[in-house]
Length: 85
Image (cartoon, rainbow, N blue to C red; front, side):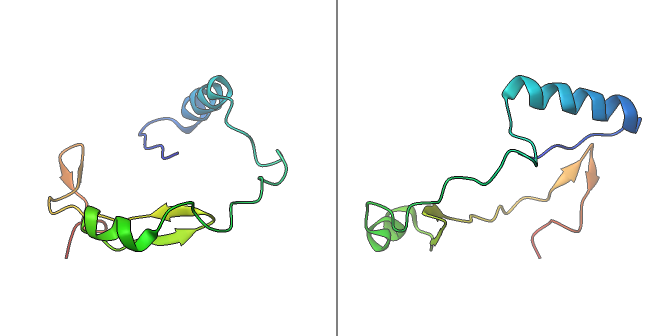
């Protein structure tokens, strides 16, 4: 989950806390996560050419990163830290 916000930290923290409670997102003391599957039940090398991007297995999950070509902005301000180079 990613959260971006601007404003007073205390009301923001309260709102985020309430939102996480509603979504039942586990807290940092929730205990260890279930162990991931060792291998996916499909052939990664068959999926990659269909999607047109290379992938990797991370914790039993096929991960594919697709960079965007557009400039990234926040409230109309160009974010040079995340824009394509």
